[in-house]
Length: 251
Image 1 (cartoon, one colour):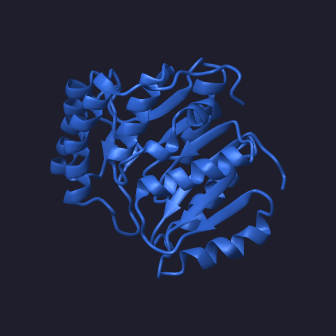
Image 2 (cartoon, one colour):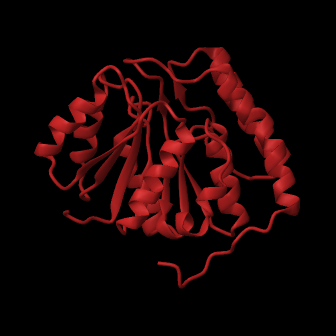
């Protein structure tokens, strides 16, 4: 395998309309990014498109195929373990639908590689509200959900539910991934909360979030409910759970 220091994890379920374009966009960036697609048994043929592209991007495009739709959080955990086992230093989360602009990946990388952050977040809310083509009701729901999370948990992060993230490997090597409990969008909150509790430095990088043009959103009320009620459990954990601290000897 051609080794690199950066890998972008992209979970997929029914993303045939987007997957080839997002792969080509990331592969076209400077810096030699690798991609890991975590594919949850899409019936629309997403995996077949990735397999076809693997011959073109040999050694840079990888795929983990799972048996069904098992949740966003478990997809990322599987991706994190895969990337840690193979020695990647910078591990990214990104959606397949272009709501996250691949051109922002280098900015997230620089925040960690040269800016002193252990975890950088592509933030919709750190400099106002930078969301395009979302219904106003969803914008307000997302914005005030992050406000609610900050109030309950004490986090200073403006965009606590953001899914556009760069981790240094030491963050993911320190967090006990087997103890991450949430599967939906509360997973994003839990990872940020845990990273802060472990003593890692977080930096928000302002980005513009654009609603998907192709395919179907995976957001639903149960996922939102998990995020809203899960933060109470996180606050409880913050009082009573012992979190590991970063060990410089972790590689």
